[in-house]
Length: 296
Image (cartoon, rainbow, N blue to C red; front, side):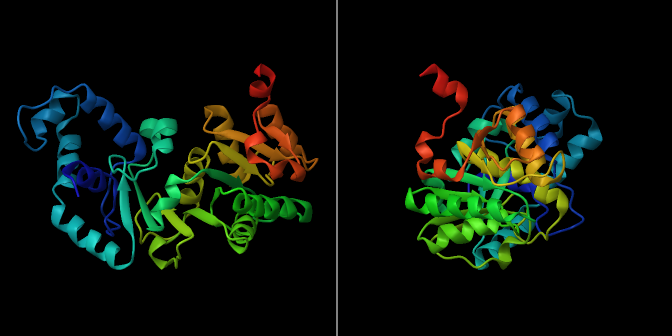
């Protein structure tokens, strides 16, 4: 592992220690922006307190960053533990890190993604499916058809592995010979995989579920793909609404929302989502935002 990859891990991971305080995504972004303007040191040397002070950090902040970077032995032990459980890190500077995440999210992309499973799935065309946990019958049928069509059309289905729409679509895809990427919010090391599944986790591979993790990973699901299908959403509430509204605000991917007649679906269309029905799932390439179709 290259020093730059180690640096990202040391700065962003708890390394299995609940008392360790890694940098938050916003703190990592600030550090990256400041270091981009720092003159490159001559030769190979470690970052110093003087470097950090010169780019606007106080003594306490500089010492915190340097302390994180000094935990090399702890990192070595953590990487070995992860390897034994089939978990590997993909940092922003790793060759296997999803390029689309970097292109779409920039410095808001996770400093590190932990992965378990078939990494080649990141090289294939992908389509995302999001939706509510408590899902109505017609919306279940949409989620199932989305999974079936992903398999038939050669797309990797990206979802969040949650109860409801996510697992319905994932099961449909796998049962029809397809492949799935699950961006999870619970413990990565406990997952069992085969050559058609890849699990990704924004946080440490041994970190348990939390509601905050579930909300945070939504941006990864939306940004991993050029197109996102919404099977069902609450109105102004829930993770599906939160993630989809943020996507539409930031333009992370094109959004296609199942036209189920609900107030939530209508509201997402008002925000910029394209309404869609089950029959339109038969050709993912034909799914284009209205403005793109208008300009053709």
